[in-house]
Length: 105
Image (cartoon, rainbow, N blue to C red; front, side, top):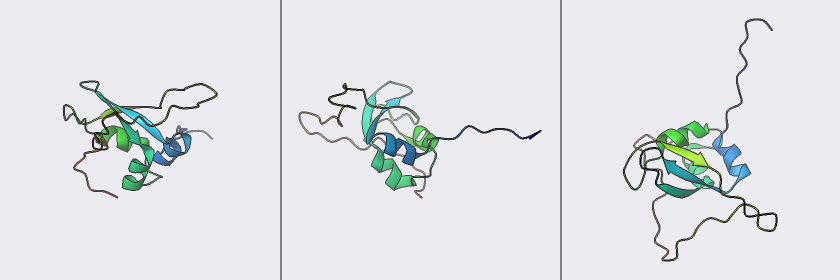
């Protein structure tokens, strides 16, 4: 139809969760990376929320900068699939990487 703009489908948090159980968050300032279980973001903001919300709201646990790049986990090969969620050897647990001051919901 004439005059109508086509919109690209936005990726939701639910889409990410269905595609992979976890992903990497990379700080846009200091390039620190942190793994995040997709379920954390889905529980916090809902499956229908745009993944842009996560990109805008993630706060770096190293430098405090707000804003992140999202990357899927590495492919481990056909026998492994996507690599499992990284577990630190000393089991020191960082916060989820989502430390925003915005209201939830």
